[in-house]
Image (cartoon, rainbow, N blue to C red; front, side, top):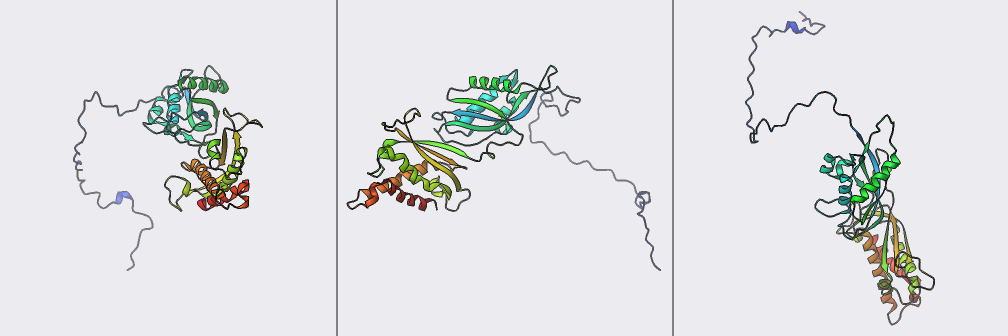
Length: 336
C-alpha cells in the first residue's frame, strides 16, 4: 500500500521524544586565569552607567592646516616617535592649546597620536629641508554654540586658534591659517601637484659649465639640461636603492624652471652677477631624495660636456649653449 505523507509539518507538541526525562546539564570546568588576582576595590566596573551622559560641548570637524617651517633643526617633516620632527612639534602644540576653555585635540586622542585625528600631509620633506607652505588635514574640536546661538563665529575662532598655537610653537614653525574642509578631505590624496625649489650656488655651476657659457647663462644652461626630466619617466636610478621595474618608481614631472637669484631672494640687476640659480620643479609626486639626485646628475652631465669641450680638438659648437643639449642625452639614458 502507498505510504501517505502529511502535507504540513508535524507540530512541536507531537515530538516523540518529549516523554523522555531531561538530562541535567554538566557545568563547564572553569579555566584557570593567568592574570594575578587583584583586589575587588581596584577592579574596573563592568557596568556602564545608564541614562544620558553630560552634553558634549565640542564637535570634531575636519580642517586643512596651512603651516610653514625652517627645517634646519628637524629630522624631516613626518611624525616619527622619539625623533624631533616638524609634525611632532606641530601636533604637540595643537594638543596643548586650549581656546575658549576647550582643547583643540581631546586628551585621549592626543595620547594615542596623530592617526586618531585623521592626520595626513600633502608633501613630505627630508632632513634640513624647509617649506614656505605645506598643508596637513586633521580633525579638531570645535566648541558648540551656547547661549541660544545657532552657530559660532568661525572666522574669529580660527584667528584665536592661530594666535594661541603660534604661542606654543617655536620660532621656526608657524601656523598660517585653518581652512574648513569637507568630511572626506585628505591633504595627501587631494594634492595633485607639489612644488619644490632648490638653490644651486653660481660658483658651483661655473665649475661645470662649458667654457663658452657666460656666468649669466648658467640658469639657461641648467634648465636646458634638466628639461630632459620633464614628462613621465621611471626614476629608479635617482632614488635610494630601488630596483629597475619596481613598483611606484614612475613619476610625472610637470615643469622645471631655472632663474637667477641674488641673496635674500632679490632680483638680479642687469649689471650684477647672480649668487644662486633657483631650480623650481613642479610634479605630481617625488621619490625619496629624487630632486637632489636629479640636480646632481644634471650637473655631472654638464661637467662631462665641459671635459669634452676642453679636449685638444673640441667640436665647433662646444663653446655655445647648445652643447648642453648633448648632456641631456645622458639624462634620457638614465631615466628610460
